[in-house]
Image (cartoon, rainbow, N blue to C red; front, side, top):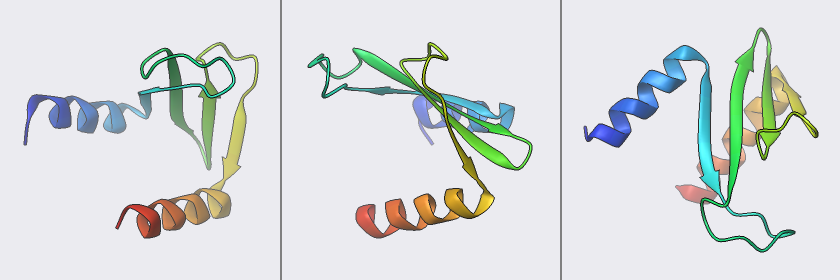
Length: 75
């Protein structure tokens, strides 16, 4: 396991991961935006731009649907 993978696993264990993404609205390059993802009790919180201005919360069943979709799309 590489250093990046180890850091990711540690972040997952702490319950919060920041993913470098691009924002199609603001047309920035990859890494221009960040997506904070964290586990809060029985839900998953997605915080685009890590500002708290637009937070998306998935309940457990919604998180499972997202997981299944990503697994199907990414293999």
